[in-house]
Length: 257
Image (tube, rainbow, N blue to C red; front, top):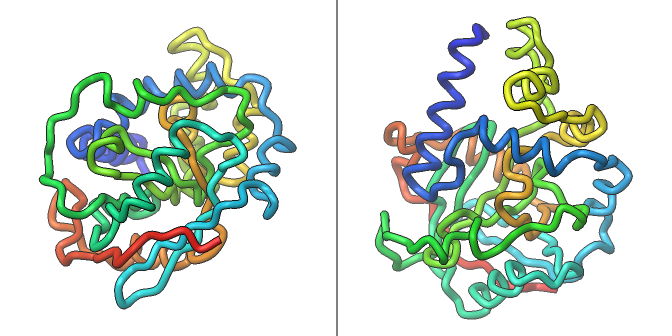
């Protein structure tokens, strides 16, 4: 894939996330934030996140007529973001909610029902302002992670990350097309060192490193990721808003364990 096509694709991702939730102001800026936080991370730390005993609260996301997705919440962290997410689930805000954004090979976003679209949100209620993920939590937005969106406090929107290790490899390949590595690019462009050890986390597991340290990662899918992939692969989108042409109803999200 030519480098200009790749960057065009990433720009479309940035535009839609800005328009719908403000998740990323600029993908490249978030790479810089990632570079700062990932220094010193190890893959051994990452594996803790994938262990069955890490996080005892299990949440089931039921997609009408399609199946379910099971998520283990990271309640061990006892973060404010986790508590608010559980409160919203227990309050029933996700009854008859829907899949609001579908970006193939990247993410699926779910939004609470009965809330008008394009609501204005004050600066202090934005997720990136309310919750500051700890750089020492050992939790990363890898493939299959559940990450809260910028407007979460208002519309309950959250993402399931589906950017695979192949996507990370493609990203690096596009940079190498220009003769530089990802770490070199970050160092040369911004003067910040991105360690190979930090990059190895995403090379091995996939994910969205540009979200790390910006939006809280509150859970990990451990069952039903194939359904997420099916939705991303087969859903038709209306336009560059990445909204599904036919409504995908989330019949409920509840705590099951």
